[in-house]
Image (cartoon, rainbow, N blue to C red):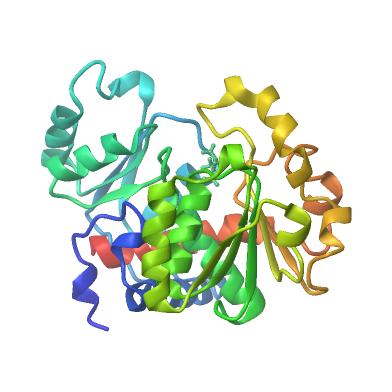
Length: 313
Ligand code: CP
Ligand code: NVA
């Protein structure tokens, strides 16, 4: 594949990338990880580049993996918290976008409203990466795909089961499955089902790409024979006020040993982290032999190095 096709592009969700492009990103990530494990970080494709991280919500993995990735690749980064910038409050979103566009080479944004991200991308000519919005978390799913590929040797032909809240991570998962032709069972309470627009569009796309994306309200049925079991917090950042009410509806979706007894014997358990241990996942499962959550967190670094290399160099 001609690497030039990535240059200068935004990464707002996986849906903007083709199957071939996603596979190329994953192959690049594998290669960078392989080199990194041998202590080879000679390539400096981001030399002279400066990346700003503008985050309106807290972060451990996304912030650290991007800051480290930029440095490994020879560039520099800096962090802007919500207090400094006041996106859309201290000044208009488009003004922030136009000013940053004149000063830095790339932006990683973590925000609430996905519209903020779209507006920044519209007014900034530099690459804009979605470091999580209320709607999507594509960098997470890119790292997740890399992890599944490593652990299972493939992506297609596996039953992947997402349990819990129909949130941003779930949306990006559904889009990924629809492009890559994966089998994904989404199991959420009716009340916390994913956006119907995203669902319908993914069904259309998925049909063309040989995907099988199913909704199953019953977690016991959803998990039957699953090789990959995925969960995320029940109350995402910004939804903390609904925490107690959500617990009531989401309790049956807790990933625990009892539920997992119905999965395929060689299942892996994934969680984007941070996890609320004892809520959506038990300690026993999180720390158990099937859990790949820490490898998954590490892979954020390798996946994003591939992304930065391809869109920014
Ligand atoms: N998974 C993830 O994005 O973690 P952070 O919120 O810590 O960045
Ligand atoms: N759904 C979670 C993901 C955190 C990485 C949230 O938005 O808070």
